[in-house]
Structures are given as structure tokens and as C-alpha cells.
Length: 158
Image (cartoon, rainbow, N blue to C red; front, side, top):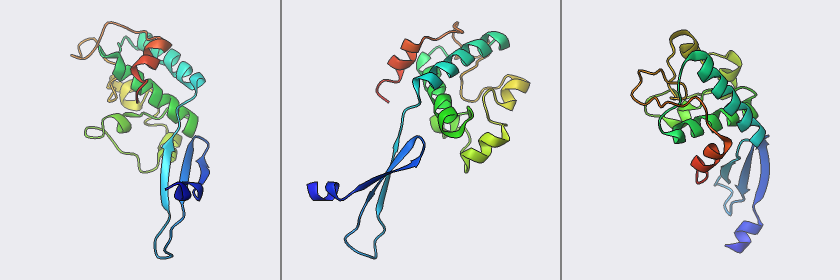
């Protein structure tokens, strides 16, 4: 086992992810590739937190009564901001049963339709990732603010 770990190679595949490639013993087998997710920067999380608070106030919407949902979405937006250069909606990561899957995240980010606030949110106040909820939504809380500490606590074990 130790010998196998010593013979692995770690390479950076994108600015925010790493791949560990393990050599194989048989030429007919492909190397094992494992991707590790890297946390978004604190700066990006703070930028997305402030944006979310400002947009909630501006649009008359509220955060989810479960601040864990809000925290995960904000961190997802920050991760996409770091990796794609735009806050692409992360709801495909969160709610894969009810929302979309991106075949090409970079292309989606460059098109802008699903960048937060997405077109459905701007046009009809429909936020599929549950970051911005209208007051009549059963899951809407009463807050339009969230602290950095709340985000860190809610996402500490993810």
C-alpha cells in the first residue's frame, strides 16, 4: 500500500482542482484518476455573501428558513466564481433530482443565462436553488442577511 502511494503522481488539472494519477501494473489497464474538490476562497465566499444580501434586499426576497441551504448555495456560487470566473447557479450540485445538469459549465457560464441572478429569477422571481425566496414561499425565512460565521458553521463538515 505504501509503495502504491509513493508511486502516485499529483497534478493540477484546473486552477482549483487536483488529480491523483496512480500508475497501473498492467499495460491494458488505464491509470486511476481521482479528482479532489478544492474549497472556494474566503474572498469569493465573502463577495457572494454580500451580493446575496444586497440582491435579497433589492428584489424583496428572503433567505431560506434553513440557513444551511443558503450557506451551501453561496459557497457553490463562490466556487464557480473561482473556477469559471462567473457565479454559475450551483443548484445542479445541490438538487440534482429537480434541477439541471451542466454538460459544459464553462460554456454555460459564458452564455450567462444561469449566472446568478439567473434569467428566471430576474424575470419571474423563480430561484430554483432556493437562495432568493419570495415571502409567500413555504420555505422563506425572515432574514435577508447571513454572517460569514453562519456560512462557515453550516458548511464545516461538507
